[in-house]
Length: 420
Ligand SMILES: Nc1nc2c(ncn2[C@@H]2O[C@H](COP(=O)(O)OP(=O)(O)OP(=O)(O)O)[C@@H](O)[C@H]2O)c(=O)[nH]1
Ligand SMILES: [Mg+2]
Image (cartoon, rainbow, N blue to C red; front, top):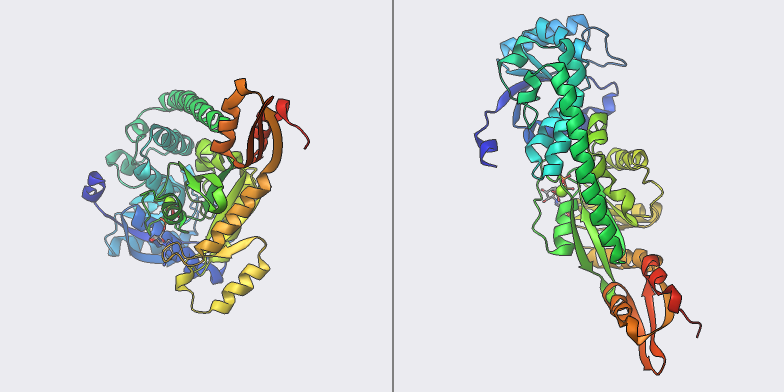
């Protein structure tokens, strides 16, 4: 954290390119939030409505001159383009503007680089940065990139960006191998969690929706909850207790954003796909965000990309302490299947949410009756640990047990099940 505070704040001219005027506020607020998280200070902005980027310079030629003038006049350190700029476009822009040019993808990668704490996180960030820089490295070696680091150049990959293409390619394949290894460990962890036949859920949602705040409330954790985007990068899993003796393993993980850069999705596959292994998802939506519908849909689209859209979803509309019009809440819950409204901060609505989660868990459990031999008494203990026991009787021919269990645990008991 310390070096972050010491890092110089870079001043930027922001270039907006969204076509739809109605999205202006959303797009502006989002880019400003990303800037804050990357310690970039927006000092001026300019806009061009682009239905598609210009081949050579991304924005139109006249606009490039305007940007150059504005950047010079405002004494900016860099120009930040709210889109994905190709290597050639970036080089052309930098030459004509006479300043470092960074795009939205680089900005997001930079934030991820700042946030990465675990080895897996760092490996994934470096892979994303290198695969993104690779085509650019080919010819894009401009004097600005050679000069110094800063936004778009930070992170574990920083020094490597100076090396030649072949070295970068070698590094990418080595990273892929290392990530494979980390992935294997993660899969083993998942498998061993599966040995504890618990229901699993993952909290998903747009960045800053309140996922970690909710996790802290439910699991008593002390995870960083912060207004800045991408406060959470690495997943955390905890067991939580639900009403009536049910329980659940819950994971808090990285947030999503509109147009999540494809390089990030590819590199962060193993973090992002945490949700694909869950029994169901808890989708947290920040109802106080003016663009909550756009955010909700962006999350649903990302779930589709991750092939997790067929999971059962409990939608949790959060931050209702900021909503004056309470009739709106009832309307939303009525319209949106399997949803609740809460405030993770005040605790309002949490009881209903717990009931809704318990119902999701109950949906995963089935009641099983079994007569377990005394030699296998450990299985009975498992029923207590991982399920909900209704009845236990010590009989001459074994322990009779009646319990609500997830399918993995039911399979373990299959040999001994009885009809009664
Ligand atoms: N008013 C209000 N603020 C909330 C509520 N829940 C979360 N917040 C605030 O929203 C901001 C983001 O919360 P986080 O819990 O970090 O959100 P997140 O979804 O984990 O975000 P990332 O990990 O960055 O993707 C913080 O400033 C929280 O204090 C709520 O119910 N009401
Ligand atoms: Mg978080």
